[in-house]
Amino acid sequence: MVARRTAAWIWGLDVLPPGVNQADCAAEFIRPLGFETDLDPPSLAPENVEVPQEHALEVEKIRVTSLPRTALDCARWLPRIEAVAALDQFLRRGVERDELREMARVLSGYRGNKRLREIVRLGDPGAASPGESWTRATIVDAGFPSPRTQVPVPGPGGRWFYVDLGYPDFRVGVEYDGERHHSGREARAHDQRRRRWLTTEMGWEIIPVTKEFLSRPAPYLEALLTAMFQRGWNPPEATVNRISRRLRTLSRRPR
Image (cartoon, rainbow, N blue to C red; front, side, top):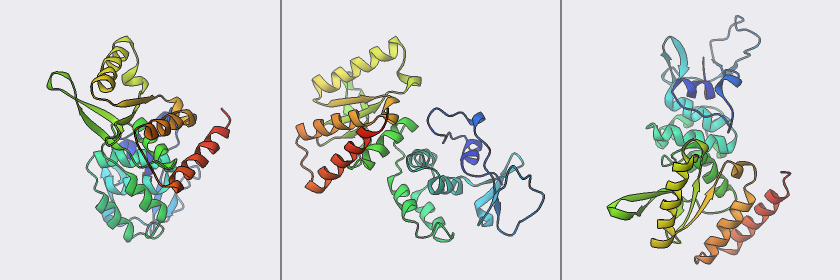
């Protein structure tokens, strides 16, 4: 049975790591308990997994885990930041958090899993791209409070702008500039006009991040910490210490 990343691809979702193409990834399969057979090709080596009947169906004659079960499996098995980004996409597709929690309660290895509970809690359907999800998860893992997604801010002429990730109480925002939608002269000019309005007219401080954030987040997180302090953020000492320790660890990573 097709599962996890491959099942997500069949459902039309890209939950691959940054910069990885589907064609470069091995297909992922599982074998429902009770359906053991010696006919599986050795190269696939599917593991035996508990799959209730209602967790599976056929898509164009391919046996695949259902949309919510695929979401749960990705949240359970993918690396943490990738799991959050994957879950964000499933939530945008209409999968409900409570449905995932109920599903996890009946599965061994999922029931009571602390990491899975945390991933489900962190999921946010407001993330508009995997890049935004990776950025938000990295910010939270560093010790910051979880930023709101798609924060509405009044724009010129009665329009609205939406800050990718933001702390409205302090008017500090973080925006992920992916190559797909933020490259080219016209796109860059639009970003500049929009951010000029947000800063000069609405009093926001916007910290743009690029794909470099994924491998070298420390400078961006330091800028976020400085902006939050300057805007009046006064967290508990334990929070500051946690962020400081995380920044030191990230700064020591080889570039």
